[in-house]
Length: 218
Image 1 (cartoon, rainbow, N blue to C red):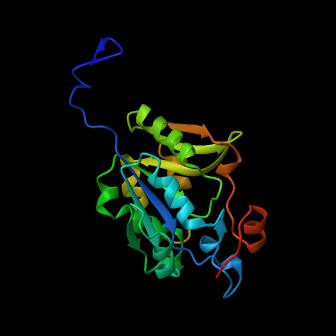
Image 2: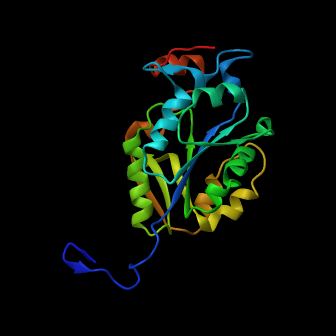
């Protein structure tokens, strides 16, 4: 088998491709939207619920699987994702914070079998399929042996791809914390990929949803 006229090395022949699962975090209570207020993930951007917009970007990215973690108003979130190539992981303990949602997603067989897991927040309307493809290409280009992080002008953001080497640390997280200290303390090389302002744009309040171009629903 030839590639660009150069034979593949014996290490490359028959080697399985680097696999990546997306864990889409869509379980939170969105408390900053106000008590009993509209759900930010059901706000529509260009006529599409935000959670579906995020999931569609993930599905189109070339990732091997997409796992949507649900919790608060789970039935509505599942309904908004109807027909997409995604599996669901329900986090009954979603009120305890982000760690429980990470654990729910990382516990799925699709995640456990992957060489890397792309952790994606469902409330980031600027993230595109192309952004995710850039992150995946960087991870696969590093042989699955690096942490890949979206940044904007050098400032760290989201999404992030975590390699298999840190899965155990993620499973030990507790409370309302993410993986930042794991990323910074792992000693694993970090590859920063600049995707522009989308790396920082999330929508936590009704004002932020409207400012980002969304239309609040139920």
